[in-house]
Amino acid sequence: LQGYYRKHHEKLLNLVKSSLETKGKCLIVDCHSFPEESFNCAVNKSSFRPEFNIGTDEFHTPKRLIEISKRYFEELGYSLGIDEPYSGTIVPMEYYKKDERVQSIMLEVNRKLYLSGTEKSEGYEKIKEVVQEYLKLLKKTTKLHTIN
Image (cartoon, rainbow, N blue to C red; front, side, top):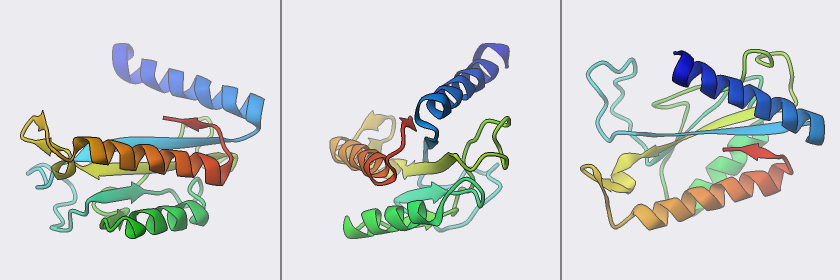
């Protein structure tokens, strides 16, 4: 816990504080990937496994970020889950449900798009570009300092 979890969250907290001090606002983009098949131990065993998923928070994810995300992935022809199969997004506890200047959205990428077993697939570079363009779009559209 001390070596990884707490260290990571302390760094995140410091980056958020810095962004608020210098920009007056902050956007956290919480990125992950998920397998095509749900794990046996998964809480959500839904068969819906979209190509991309965004996780949101009622307080910290403005509706416009959800709409931007829907439009972006739809225009590229990808399926998108909204809080399905994964929900929520990270916000340091010091700001959680307390400071609307801290915005956050989670992006989950289905591994089938860029992996074949444990190796990069042919789709790797394309998905890397899709994710990078999504991050640029969020930054440009929200005019916020992003922490990736």
